[in-house]
Picture 1 (cartoon, rainbow, N blue to C red):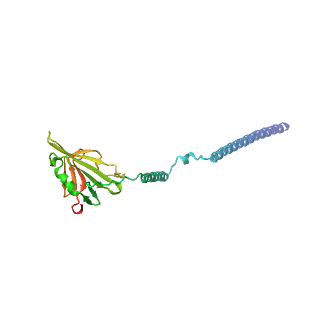
Picture 2: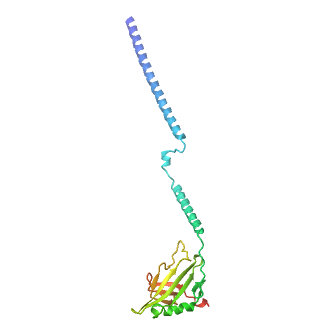
Picture 3: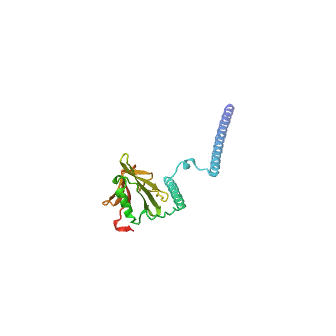
Length: 223
């Protein structure tokens, strides 16, 4: 009986020791887990508090609308700067026509007789002719185009032509310029008047088979 009692007491002591040991291990694990969780929360808070630092996931996502607004603002600023630069351009020097200049302005033509006499005798239309005229075409706010036309003739080869020198110093082309303008010296064959189309034309030129010089304005001639 006494031996049984001692045996039971030993077994109970052994079980108590084991249970106590298990409880301490569980408690230590919970403490360690809580400690790690607290450290992670602290690191996250530190990252959140760094100035200018955002979430990697958030920074990698860019709204298409934001990109569109950026480019629209950039284009608007660029156009505004271009317009400001254009306004700051120096004004064109005014050209004062000479008395014998052929001048087309505001749908009116001055010295049409000089122009048509030249047309009839210059280039391939005549021979042994070295006449010359100046044609001025008013383009409004863009200034004036100036054409110096001179007839030439080479007797040795029996060949005639019209030399055309263009002066653009009193003219400023628009940004969206589509007008056909001589920008180099030309050698043309002859000149004509197209009454159906309503233009004086130069033909067989270096860069153009035909070139519309100025409109015809029969009812608006200026003496």
